[in-house]
Amino acid sequence: MERLSPAETASLLPYPELASVIAATLSDCRAGRVVAPRDVSYRLPGGATLLLKTAWDDNIGVLKRVSVHPRNADRSLPLVRAEVTVFDVSSGEPLLLLDGETLTARRTAALSLLAAQTLALGEVRTLLVIGTGVQARAHLEAFAHLHPHNVYVYGRTFSRAAALAAYGRRLGLNSQTVPWPDKAAASDVIVAATSSPQPVVPENAAEKSLVISVGSFTPEMAEAPPQLVKRSRVYVDTLAGAKESAGDLIQAQVDWKDVTPLAKALRAPRPHSGPIFFKSVGSGLFDLAAARLAYGMKST
Image (tube, rainbow, N blue to C red):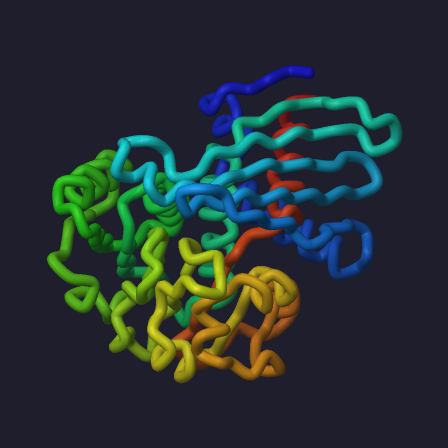
């Protein structure tokens, strides 16, 4: 079995192609051609969380171990630690070991890119990124493919926000920091990619805004205030995962009958009014999509 470095893993997961494969994998899951059991989650000492994810189709499967360590930000260590094994479903033979942190960042950002392509009310001219970690960086990379005119970055530590904005400029984006998220609440797309247990998205997000939350992943965490969720059209990556883990929606006491999974949205007309709220909590389904793309590119 070949073990791929972070750089090698990233090279096999270009964002636009990955977004397309995620869409196809969602369609396959809806048609019963992909199996993605519910994630298994455990609490670890020190406030950390261990997640086990798996999914498979008729050819390959993935098994992912991921652990989230909120205290690592203060240690200058990655917030997320992960590895993904790709295996042959007919023989069990391991085929590839992908860098899980890289795969997680890229498939999450590619999923957000797909959500924007599907749900945004118009051209993405302005983007606000809340957060300064690995996910925030990946989202800058992914959304660069939409060529926004202006990008705003907010982080609780100014030096980290300034560094991310500078990285955005190296990507060709007109990016700058803002002192508070409210200063860019009218952005076409607002991405929250933080480990904050309390809301960080401005409650006064514009009616035209698509708000994407990818950081909170437990019932106790919420990046968006309940008032914003309640006045939004709500979409999720998977309905089962959201019902278990999407604190933003659970705390807002949403009516789940009004929550639309992305797989259904891909086959429906684009929303005509907002704000739109898209919640992503992750699933082995999206790791399988990344493995499909990476293994396919590696085999050609």
